[in-house]
Image (cartoon, rainbow, N blue to C red):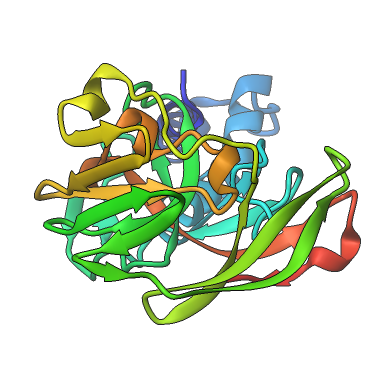
Length: 260
C-alpha cells in the first residue's frame, strides 16, 4: 500500500470517529466518564493527520534521494522538498489533475511515478517536452535540431565510488546545471520494449519524438542513470511535482539550501 493511500484511510477513519464523538458518543456517555482509548486517540490525532494530508497532497512533499543518478545536483541521502502545485492541482491518490496551473519546463528537476512500476517514485531532469525531437548521440544532446550548449569544467570526484568523471555545465531551458560523463561508458543504451517502440537506436545513441502528454527525462549523471533512454516517456498523469529545495543531508549538513 502506498503512503498516500494509507494516510487517506487513516484520515477517513479518525475523521469518522471524531465526528461520531462530537455528534453522538459524547452525549450518550455518562457525565465524568472517560473516552474509550480508540476515541481519545482518534480525536487527538485527526487534526494532525488532516494538516499533514493537506500539506502533503497539495503543497509540498518530502522525498529522500536513494540513488546517484542525479549527481552532482542531488546526492544520495539528500532530503528534498517537492512542490505539488506548480504543475497543477491533483486529486490525492488518484493523481488526476483538477486545476491547470502550468506544465513542466525543460531543465526542471521533477519527481514522477515510474512508468513501469507506478508504486515507485523517480526523480530526473526534464529534457524533452511534448512534440520535441530529442537526440542523444555520442553523449551530446540535441533538441529540435539545436545542440544543447555545454562547457567543460573541473572533473568531479565521487567520494562514494572514488573515481573521477568529466563534469560539464549544460544550459537547458532558462538555467544552467552540471552533468557528469564517463569516458569508458558506452554511448548507446539497451532499451526496454516500451522505449524501443518510440525511439530509433544505434551504436551512437538514440533519437526520439516525444508524444503528446509525455516527457523525456534524463539523469544528470548521464552514464549512471536509468531514464527515458532506457524505459521510455513519462505520461503527464504520473507527475508528482517539481523538486526545489534540499533541507537535509545527514552526511553533509552544509547541503541545506536550494538547487537548480
